[in-house]
Length: 174
Image 1 (tube, one colour):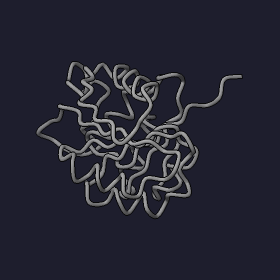
Image 2 (cartoon, rainbow, N blue to C red):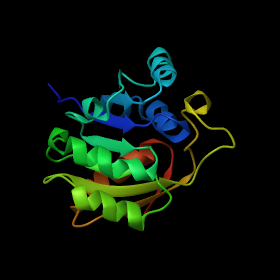
Image 3 (cartoon, rainbow, N blue to C red):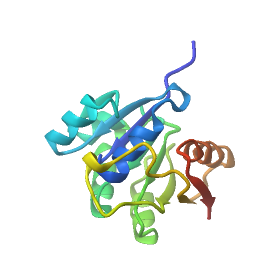
Image 4 (cartoon, rainbow, N blue to C red):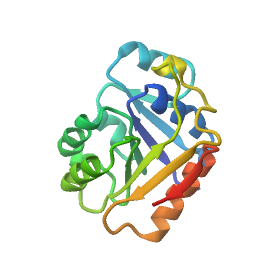
């Protein structure tokens, strides 16, 4: 029996919601979503964008192979620091922030042992925001900048690039 591939998406706004929709079916993955807004959580579950929904980030992070942070850049460091013990060994952490150096440094400073950071930035968006405006095709044909941090194994970068390609996006590893 093939083991479950779990993806956590922390923050289900326009980009996080679009990631959730677009990742449905990737390697038969299970998607754990997290958002602080109760209406967003309700809609994400009702619309089947996610398999599980949580208010607390740590609950979504637990046992996840890949964790996407689609939150405000300033919140990522604290979420990782508080939940460091909940990350699965071998997991990959990514973000979708446009500002890379400060976010990357912040994440790498609290990165749990055995967890890799691969930064990302989809060159996509809309004039509208929020989960209700997310879609499974927002990232199609959009460049998706991938910026591995530290000493990430080539196999992990390749696997992450495959995941990004499955969105219909065009991955660019920098």
